[in-house]
Image (cartoon, one colour):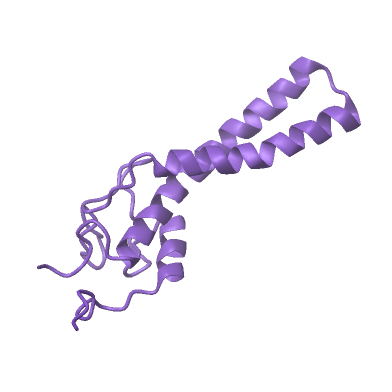
Length: 129
């Protein structure tokens, strides 16, 4: 009985995801994975690892919405019940907080998803057939 992954190199998952979250190459950890805010490089500038196989698609946006929503919903409830601020003040503070947190998390979660795909040999990241 042969396993199709017997010739695949062992790639540890969590270091690759952490390197991706830091917006670094999941292979070497030093080259930048992004060439602009959300555009993933074709290959690493340091180790030349091919990164063009990634298929992050809508995953980073969904994760960003999930995280920001789960953080901000309880906070807005606590702020409203404990402090009773004016509605416009509450809206302004939380709108700025949501936008800032979303802009911070989006490229990092995209890098983490690319790192996950690289570590799990998904979408062409594995050895050539």
